[in-house]
Image 1: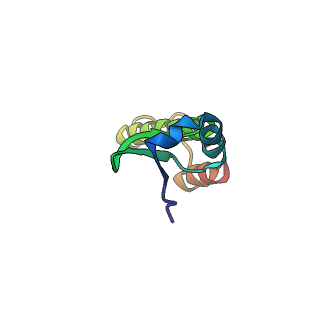
Image 2 (image 1 turned 60 degrees about the vertical axis):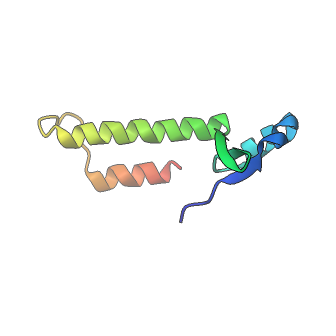
Length: 88
């Protein structure tokens, strides 16, 4: 189940201490709206690093799956996926 992002109006950015606290406590990105429309996304550095790591892993996995000659360091897919899930 995907958790919906928190949505805040842009005028909430005036309270930087509260925004920082909300970002650090949130497991999802915070969508900032302007005039009722999505304008930007904020997230903690920890969430950003986890997201980037997942993207990089997906890219490497995709490259490995598309290159059958690349067998060095091969790992069974189920073990690989279990390792990803266990590290979250």
